[in-house]
Length: 254
Image 1 (cartoon, rainbow, N blue to C red):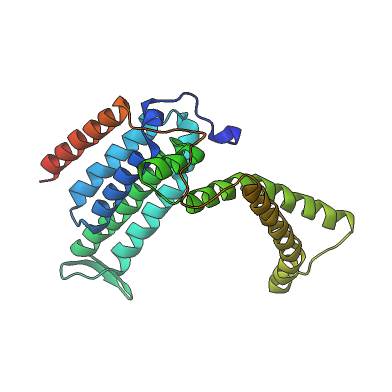
Image 2: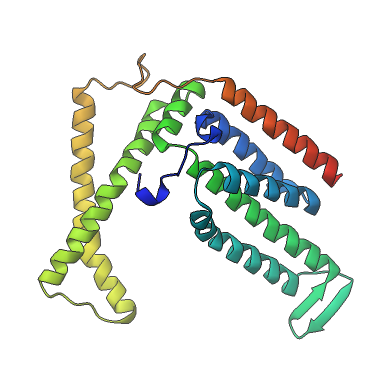
């Protein structure tokens, strides 16, 4: 994991089963997606904001930088809906721009939903190790190993692909190759980078397949896991905290 994404401390959120955390967060995302209660969505955003900033273990400076796209997403979606939304109670209108009480309500709802999605996503991604997440999905949720190991291999190979792009870029510079400006230049870059990287990816995938066959990897066979995962007392604490918070939010928003 890059140093920038290493937390200062591992909080109790890191000890929650990743598969359980993923399932509960997805459930809350679906609830957020289909609700039209602004107060409910706002309190959900506050809840996940507290989880992200208070219990992710990352310093405030890093979280603030990561939150910049979320603020931009909130502002752009909210103001777009406010300026071009529909409504009968018109407050201000000029040309195509039309602001009404209904458009303000819808704009705030849309912006707060995007903010909630961002907080949920960052809270999950920053408090879970990808490899343990897929191992937990295989062991607790019976995800077929062919999908889980494919994702694990993809994540493991990302730094290799980045390194190959850097090597290819340096090689082109040494050869004195320059690219045209504009769209033509983008086409030349894609042609110069895509073919070698694609060929390397095919060779790497073939080597991985041969290694898995050599280790007697078989679909559907009983297997042991290098990283055993299970439910723990911390999972109960996590579910209880979320249940109390959601009940409080329903009470406050009702």
